[in-house]
Amino acid sequence: MNSAFLQKSIDVILNNQNDQGGYIASPNFEQYTYYWLRDGAYTAYAMDSAGHTVSASKFHTWVIHTILHNEKKILNCIYKVEHHKTIQPAEYLHCRFNADGSEAHGDWAYHQLDGLAVWLWTFGEHCFHLNKDKLCASEERALQLATAYLTALWNSPCYDSWEEDKEGIHTYTLATIYGGLEKISHLLPGEEHLATHKQIKTYILHNLQQNGRFVKSSLRDGVDANLLGLVVPFQVIPHTNEIFQQTLKVIEEELLSPTGGLHRYPHDIYYGGGEWILLSAWLGLVYAQIGQRDKAAYQLQWIENQFSAKGYLPEQTSHHLLDESHYQLWCKKWGQIASPLLWSHAMHILLHLTLLPE
Image 1 (cartoon, rainbow, N blue to C red):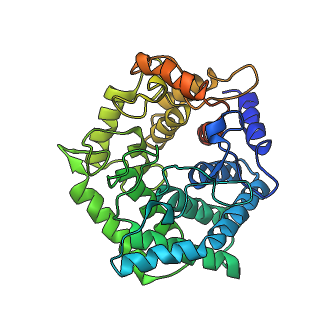
Image 2: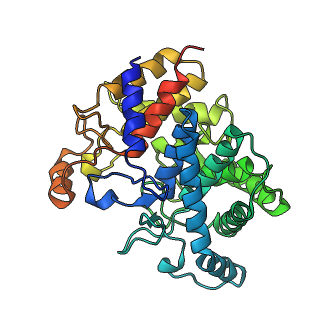
């Protein structure tokens, strides 16, 4: 385990945080030169874990500003749900933002619930790191808006964490909402979101498993590597749960490459369906939690072998593609694979820290 790689990941993140506090998804990939709550939240969690709480605090301040800036939009969606009115795609809270917290222009996968939910979870973790149990007015209002929005919309179809499949209800997305609502319950007590928290777990267990394993979504019965989130970090179920154990086995059989990289899901064609750095780290975190530290260390070694000469980790590799015919098509459309991807560096940090000697 090389501490120099840990510092490289920390430096990439700190060098790509804007003055307002947001973390750009990737500075060198045009489509990702924006700010997502999902990517940024995981990145802030990694910064907290690495002792850079000032950086994480700046990010959370930026998110709170962004939520409050969109208060009317959030309240409008809640109103429409309560009155059974149709919400138009652009009316949902946007998924990607500019550096100042304004919505990025252009058609995109607007309706994504996991970003806001992951932020709730990481904000709760941030408060834990700071030993903070009281909120200022802006923090409390942002949490109220976020929890009300998620409580109103949790069982509505939306885009998944990969910004695909907008008609489905996604297991991973529900896991993030469950985790987020549970994590901030001590900061923002409330019967309604606690009741939603329980409903979500019941829904997952009753509706999103088939043949003894969890499925990707209400519309897709295959596995997705993001199902690891059911255990790490959102703790919907314990890792000893038999359904999760079977899910992990299928993920290993269908998505884990011979060298250690993890694919997103079967038949992925984005850039040919390569091995994702952040998912390989995620698998390592699960291995560490279940006591298989040798396997976790193998994942870390594979990840650190992917660092470029500049000290960057990409979004995915171009080895062991699931569909080689689509690799050049995406390169022609959008250019080379995003590198660095801050979310990749964040997950690397988390795995590296997890494996440090106790």
